[in-house]
Image (cartoon, one colour):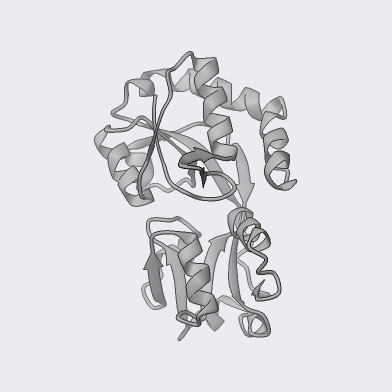
Length: 224
């Protein structure tokens, strides 16, 4: 079972040249229960999706559901984690974004190939600045190269806290109130696509047993 993945703390963290994190603990246990030999391949998120499309890799974690992805990815039925979308600005400025319409005429940083919420994802009237990774967005925000960044709270909040940036960056009053459910996805061209029911059962078991909650608490005390 070949996993394509990239840094996204606390789910995927590069530590001493190796990837660790919530997603790695999860996929290790999934592979163990599925009696699979796991191979982890680090690559940019967009390349991971392309590799899923071609069948060059078998699975990815941390996937939000999108119809266009479902053409080449089979999602497990049970999400293993739930987040929400949030917008962030420098402290003292966040209060200026109270509605979606307030995003107009702002330079909004986002991570390329990420799925946030449909209105934003499809909105071509906004000024969007795409980067490869979320930590680059935070650096750009602090240096005022962008005025707003969008992110997934369960990742961005963790990063801001761990980097000691809570006095510099805050959430805007506006948020879309959506649920960003994270799934395990299987390439439809992978041999593992024939064992989707087995993977469905394993992921549901891990959620129902509280396995995901336990490993989440190890990283940042959060619960699904």
